[in-house]
Image (cartoon, rainbow, N blue to C red; front, side):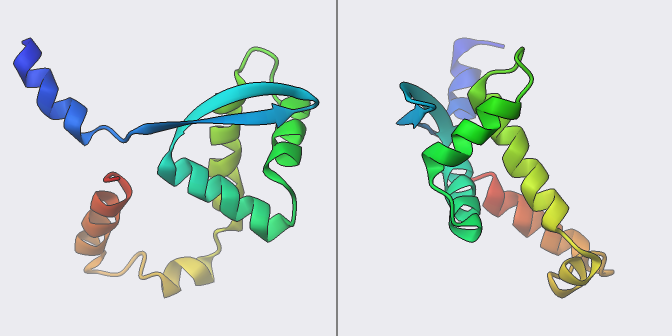
Length: 113
């Protein structure tokens, strides 16, 4: 692949946003895309916990071989996956016969920033 062909891919990659956070009394930075930060903030709002406190819990329970950012991403995925129910899937239109077009729209929306 030449350098020119990679430029098109770079334009489609979500921008990572750096944020300085305080985890268990120490300052550190994390880089996630805006959608990941938004999902993380939504969890904090739903669970009535501060971002730093939630990150402290994630750090406390994470595998020591995994980084904090990666562990936060796994947590976000797990949180929303565990919250998904059959009723919720049906009301969102999942598993319909024409869902393929809805799925394409959902993928397109979720992969663009």
